[in-house]
Amino acid sequence: MKKTVKFEDDLKRLEEIVAALEKGEGELEKALALFAEGAELVKKISSVLDRAEQQVNILSRGEGGELTEEPFEI
Amino acid sequence: MHDNVFTVTQVNNYIKNILDDDPYLGNVVVRGEMSNFKAYPSGHWYFSLKDENCSIRCVMFKGDAMRVRYRPENGMSFIAAGRVTVYPRDGQYQLYCTMLEPDGLGALYAAFEQLKTKLAAQGLFDPARKKPLPRFPEKIALITSPAGAAVRDMIRIAGRRFPYSKIVIVPVRVQGAEAPGEIATAIALANALELADVIITGRGGGSLEDLWAFNDEQVAMAIADSRIPVISAVGHEPDVTISDFVADARASTPSNAAEIALPDAMELRDRVMSLRRSMEISVESLIKSKRNRLERAAGGILSRGPGGYVAERRVALDMLSQRLIAAVSGEVSARRMKTAALAASLDAMSPLKVLSRGYAVAIGERGVMTDADQASPGDKIELTLHRGSLKCEVYEVNK
Image (cartoon, rainbow over all chains, first blue to last red):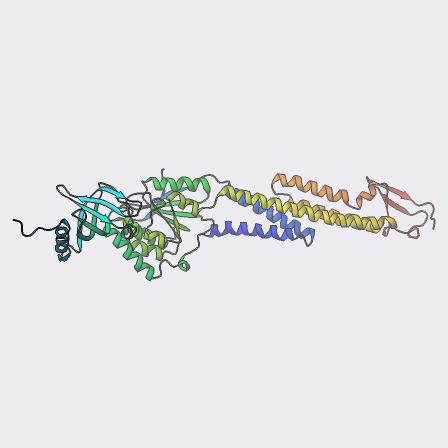
């Protein structure tokens, strides 16, 4: 669940950065720092989106009755 | 010879009166197979119900026919209720139906309506109860049969939209007597194990009986109690189940559930790219405006001659360029090119440009010189040019 929030936060932060930069005020230095942060987020989000491999498991009960996730063959 | 001769009307009316007075015929419930079904443009229905040996003519008037949820088809078994009386004009008795239900499903319909009313009264369908779905689920639990087409559809659509989300199937039976208990237990288990960020429960299409597990109170309560948001995805578009009402979101089909649960990575990618573009445009325009200010400032200085201002600015500019490079280097390599271009454009517009037009900066022992008084014959000073510098010796001072 934590990672979910993280991805969402990243996108939100990127949106904030764009909004801040669009205001167009402030120091160049500060803007460049924001830009650098934004570029890092773009990279991070893109790497998540580019991940093509889907993971599908099935919950099953082992011999001892414990629940485990096993790969599901489609 | 015949003392008592009656008219046809008298006979028919007499019979009608006998039937109308009968304690049973006023409210009869009949089971039979539908035949000769005809729906008239007037909205009235005419048909016969029959068994192996016999048949009875039936009529259902528009007002009653409109309330029947099921479009009758010949050959299907129905239960009809109404009164039997005579239509005097034809001398035919008929069943005037006020209620018509598919045989076998009638009880299910009644149970459905009852449970719906009960749960609605408990506030389980209240929109305020509905939990928001996560925008980007890390993991989805599919509580369904691992064998059906439904699970494959969901996996396929999920993989196409947002493969980043992991899927875990919690296998259950989705029809039969065991199904409701298994589904309810699986929902509770998914919550206990914090198995996923969102649950999809459902199955593919089928008859009303096939879908019945999702009209079960146990399943409804498990969905209502789930802390993890639940999407109900039962059957096809027109199928409505109790689960649909209780769930946080209702999908028309299992595939549709995957679409509701997951964002489209393609759209997201477009969004991110457009955000990046906006960022670039903003930074470029900011640099442009700073550059213009520098140019204006430099223009003012020029009339007074280049002096300390230029050197001072040069240092500031060097630092800025370095920061610019530092800030953006280590990013995507394309960005590196951009940075270099930005730094170059900054440089081109800077007061340094002044030097390239042939001006020089004189630097003496106490720094940049702006006045001839600052030097005496014999002093060694340095002249910084556009490219390189010259070490010079002063041989004459003109004031």
